[in-house]
Image 1: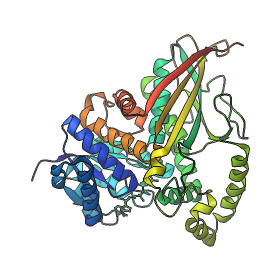
Image 2: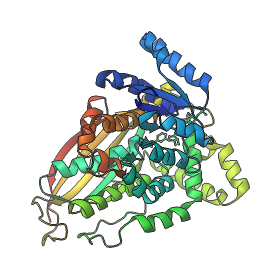
Image 3: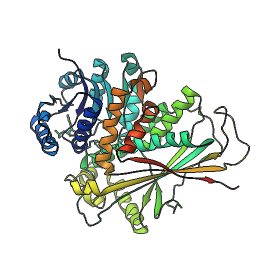
Image 4: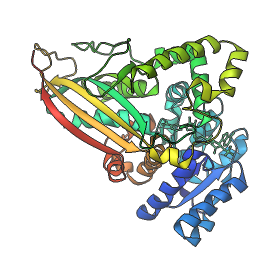
Length: 430
Ligand SMILES: NC(=O)c1ccc[n+]([C@@H]2O[C@H](COP(=O)([O-])OP(=O)(O)OC[C@H]3O[C@@H](n4cnc5c(N)ncnc54)[C@H](OP(=O)(O)O)[C@@H]3O)[C@@H](O)[C@H]2O)c1
């Protein structure tokens, strides 16, 4: 049998996959890695490669190995995972079909990264495949899209740069476009489908999280409050609303690991999303209520799935976002950290004074949904292929922060347009 490929990108025909193959092509040249592309439709895969050849003028692209695999055909998935050292999974949604790929990677001892932001899937893999991944000697890292990578590595970056001890971090995510005249959806319908699926399966998520989170974590003081009602923060213009989703739970898992395994004081985190103006907030409330009303009913869900543009003010749509829409989009994620100037010795040690020192960090970049996500995902796979000595010493299922905290991923992202910058440090007067 021929030697294994270093990496395979599965789902290359999707929007993330098509951006991903461009990053993988460049990175594999830079780092001297071999790669193949996989999907379930040969003609669509060939079309992707033809486009890449047109863009680069590189005739050797026609020789990139193509692997046919379908998540509803277990055998084809096993054959695919046995052909590479690291599988980059960019298909979705994964909650219902994705486990077959995880199992096949364990069986063939293939490292695995995926793009999923589906909390139930992320937590299920972490809970149910940890021991098997460890035994197989592989690293499995879910949630390697731009969101969890920026949040999780952003908090670790602050912890590294902060002079003393970080007690809490609040984050504010702002997303917008450089060209407001563009029309059409900003995001693919597959993400809308995942959102509906996740909202419907909140109970499953609650049960998973009751198992995943350690109830005996230290009670940190001062406790970071949660602002449930919209408010105007000082860091950005507009209104902030509480943001729920995988980003916070991924950061909390990383902090839990650092406490349990490295005896580090954890950081409390809370996430908020920025709405530009009051009328966005009013729209959000009205359509949020409609969503909540329709979701429990089969017919209601059918309507939600059929008319994504109506229920999201055009953010999601049945057709794919245009290239211009993707490439004019930008995001800015601001972290506000508070703590003390002094270093703390142990995780349970307490300070007698109120937090006196703060720091702001900003992570920002263009085309977050697709080009940026694809870059994060592909770089995650490349980190496993090239920086094994900087991964945790024991293999297993990890968050991006745990897996890549010691690698050069932040510098690599920064170099490629996803910047991590400390904005300032400030004193907090009591
Ligand atoms: N974490 C983040 O920040 C982030 C950002 C963007 C997207 N995402 C997630 O990433 C996933 C992909 O997004 P996208 O916009 O690229 O979606 P997409 O354009 O709809 O692509 C989906 C991909 O999955 C493949 N696929 C679906 N079912 C399959 C099956 N049974 N077997 C094999 N392949 C299958 C599709 O193949 P065909 O082309 O043959 O249909 C296609 O390649 C979604 O779940 C999305 O929610 C996450």
